[in-house]
Image 1: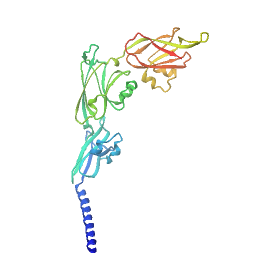
Image 2 (image 1 turned 90 degrees about the vertical axis):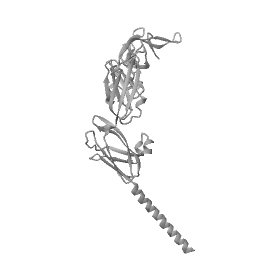
Image 3 (image 1 turned 180 degrees about the vertical axis):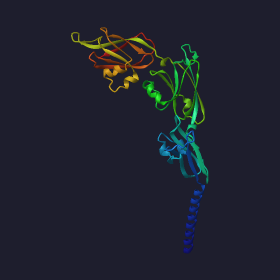
Length: 353
């Protein structure tokens, strides 16, 4: 009986050992090879590009820190080649960002199917990872009539996430131009603007008339762009806020003055107050907001109050502005942030306490 048990245990060990060897052999037999050749639009190899490899599940669950989920990462060699070696059969995703090809940089998202006992060789041309955006925009007049954009308007496609949808802190046009992919000058006749061969990415639409007057849109239609697709975006807007409209506005500056005889604090005109109107973004971009020379350098208009505490300055219609006040000796007094809509007859008041 004892000999039988020993024999049975030894036989079981042999069986287990054989099954493990068979399993390992089967896995090696089932694997397939995956390699990639990265070439530009002219057929030349693209070296030095990092390609990340994901399983389909990990790619779909990736976040901004998606590289942590990559199962492999390789840099393309001098021949533009990357070999990911032996992989289990299945679907994989190859990903690369900002790959330069011609005038643009492209984001690559390419699926690859690894087949058992076969070599899968992919050729990737970054410029093919693009789409077309057909942007139709009409300007709505005060009478709600839709007309083409005037010839003073330029329509541009701008990369995100550089831009912010918060117009109070919108960047300058000079900074924005570095992120413009394509743009068209309106002619007063055309409503349709076609952006072709656009790299797959996130974008905003920009309309502007000058460096000071811009408006952005973040179209939902182009949130998830796919290769070789055409996206149609339609907007009907009022563009009055991107045209230069300004008007004279009365400013009144007052101050609190204690009256010891009466035991009260009186509100009296403040003569000689220096006031400045600035674009909100310009003012809040200053390193020293309390320096009168720095404020003067970027001011849109300026004035000094008279004996009645009044002065006239120009206000930019529909724009977020900062009004900054200084004493006659150039000491900073205070500021007021606001947006003024329409040519209002009411003055803008400020109280120095």
